Length: 150
Image (cartoon, rainbow, N blue to C red; front, side):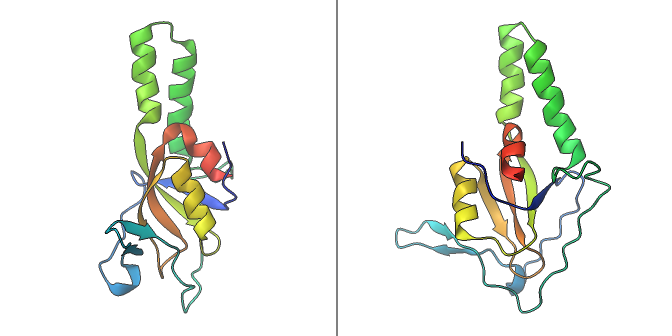
């Protein structure tokens, strides 16, 4: 599977307060296609470059993945590796496959290629920041966290 060439931090929204406003600067960056479907395109560079802060308290090992989210995925993977019962293995795999809401934070404006690569992994983009930060709110499988963060 193709690795995404991203510099980002995955932050679980369980530990991050939601800060989405309804003003024009943070409006969805999806525009309708000819067939009525929404196109996901990167926004233009903002007039004022955002200052990107990396919350070190959430990523103590500096691997660009929220430590709690990573620990959760690791625990499920370890339990899956040790489990012998078929039904329990299926339940654990379902937990890994279940989408979790995460925030991808980039060090510069995202590109169309990065959007396309993320969608190709099976991720879903809910919102692309236009002025506050570089990044997007997404849903992705827990098991894909390492692939997304590189």
